[in-house]
Image: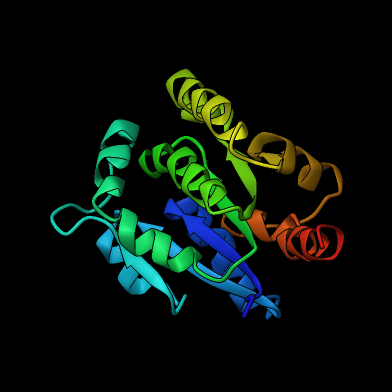
Amino acid sequence: MEKNILAIAVGGCGNNIIQNLINSHSTSGTDLFYIDADNFAVEKSSVHDKLAVSEQRNGCGGDQEFGRTIILDSKAAIMNKFDGYSKIVFIAGLAGGMAGTVPLMAEWAGQENIFVTGTAIMPFEFEGPQKRENAETTFEKWKNSLKMIFVLENDKLCKLAECLKLNIPMDDLDAFFNIPEIIDGISRYTR
């Protein structure tokens, strides 16, 4: 039996967005899965279906190569999560260490004939040129495994909120962009 859409939150940024979906009760028809190398964050997350991919380390420390290495040890568990889904939406910030895992996971899902999409969150300018370079490199690797990708520029979201004179705390900026509508649109228009 085919299941609903699976939204996979990758790393801290992905978890922030999924947490906002849960808090706004906007997860109807979408199953959620959170994966991270930060054991503390996984434990703390209110997502019911989650996986800590590192037993000995809290996070990847921004090291995307480390993220790619540790994800390989969890490939079977991750592939098992894909079972029965025809659509998967990956949600990830592309500057951190777990971002290095997203191209691999999207490729694995594509090999299972799953319609794979992504929501890429690009780093703030103040995070520095190295984070931006990491994000752009990951984006280039990731986009080839996706049917479609949505790119969110954190700096542009801040400017939009400022222009609209919205009083949105930094932690809630992800909620400002309506991820539930993206997921719903993918469900309706990819049948």
